[in-house]
Image (cartoon, rainbow, N blue to C red):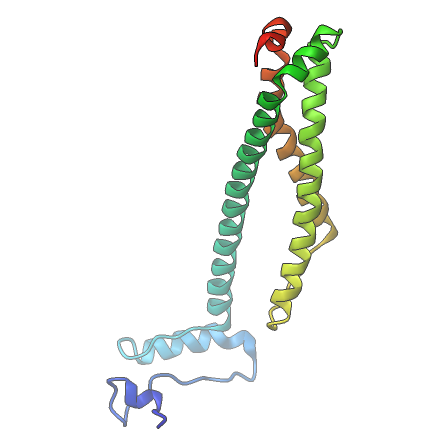
Length: 188
């Protein structure tokens, strides 16, 4: 059994919920809307094409802000994950780093080694992120929604992942460079 929308609402059957006025000259829409509101001030509410466009534009702006907020939160989480991974790597290789320092590696060499590793993680994350972004855009487009992944967005996302990787590796690199080689070689 199918119900009409009118049956589900509390409106009487002789009432109208909305109607559309089509203009010969779309530039007159504001004038006509004002005339309707003057003639029926308490009974009708008018919306012009410009009003609807502004509302849709506001919704799209809010969605953009939401997307940026999600991207920032994701970047912070990724940076923490990379920092944790690199810190665990440094702690697991405590003796190895001590041995490298004992044979002449400088603090700068140790920092570079750890940052290269975190850079590599950022590059791999960037490649997978861009590929997954393209796949997600295609999946969304298959539902009929228009998506656009520009080259600028893909390149920006890739380099953003590299920057997050490098930032995530700074603290572990600092910790690794400050290790005492004698203490590292003595530990079990």
